[in-house]
Image (cartoon, rainbow, N blue to C red):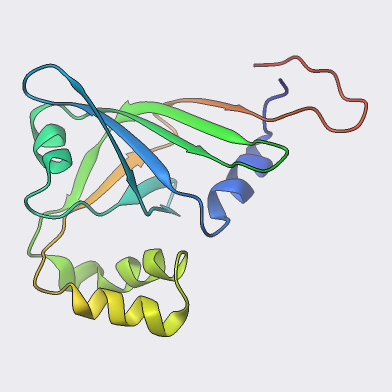
Length: 153
């Protein structure tokens, strides 16, 4: 399968609607995989777990993380990362990054719905977590296009 170019990767990650699947390890050693909304922001994949989420507990205990963003229709683009999560903002600091949170919601629901969702969940503080692309192991691939060779990963 061919790799995505850096430009193709950035464009794919910027497209609205793709979910991210976030893999962490629970305290008992079992893997956990959670789908969430995300956005590419300042060279980082960022997402917003709620204050009482196991995902947030897992990142606090062990910040190593695996991420997958993919699509169902052709050309079946995929981006996977293995990296170190950083808690950019703790729960309760939501007002500091509310506009970014609203921008994340806008990627998945229309404007009015995004604003309603963000304001409707004010009672559920969230953390803002980022995983930098530059320091992560990033793999990308897609199906070959036209007469392109099917190698490259």
